[in-house]
Length: 277
Ligand SMILES: [Zn+2]
Image (cartoon, rainbow, N blue to C red; front, side):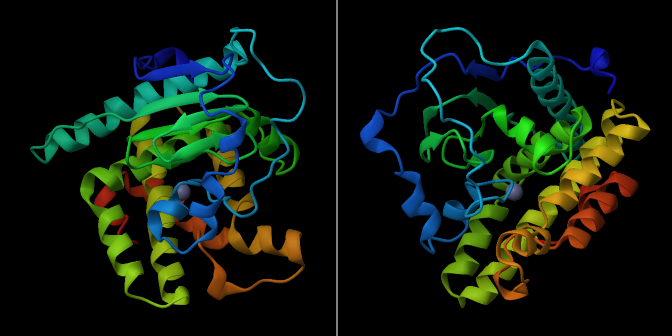
């Protein structure tokens, strides 16, 4: 990835060396939100979708209270650079429609951290919190992507960040609010279908960013595609329970995720990402 061309964002915060604000007693606070059918906020919190299947095994081991960053310089560069590039790309898109883009904040943490949506724990996938308009990510997730999901590379990491920024766009557009209302008055299966639409749109928005950013090289796109496919609901379900239950999908199948990302990537046009209203 040509990260040298990316403007580094000032909205990135590295809290990985801190012990976090939650306090042990609050561990698990987020889980009830996720487990319940609170609808989109609760579920979307686990942006990449990874919610119920999340434990990725990070966060064990000794607590990090050293005050030193746990980010590798490469990870820091990807996080700042991709975030900065999304600000540029979405800034232009909003401007063209006469609006002003209000950037999201990206917080890297380790162990646990207080977010506007509860306590973020390491071992959760990355997520977007609508109430404080921030993205939270434990960089260990990148190792997990590489190891467990065989989707290594900065192209794969860029996809993850751009997908979460996609949820921020949806928040600014009112899509998350609308989806939440729709879910509140529908059956579980119908509510899941609404959420799949929201997730596929975020994938498509990630493709729009990729197309317009000018940062990606051919191999990066393949890495992003591999990541999108690896976390498709059917693939995850097959791995975890040995069978696939489409009505319980919340993020879309591997094929759907690849298709959504491709649609954004080919068009560069957010209007084409009409998976959600
Ligand atoms: Zn998501």
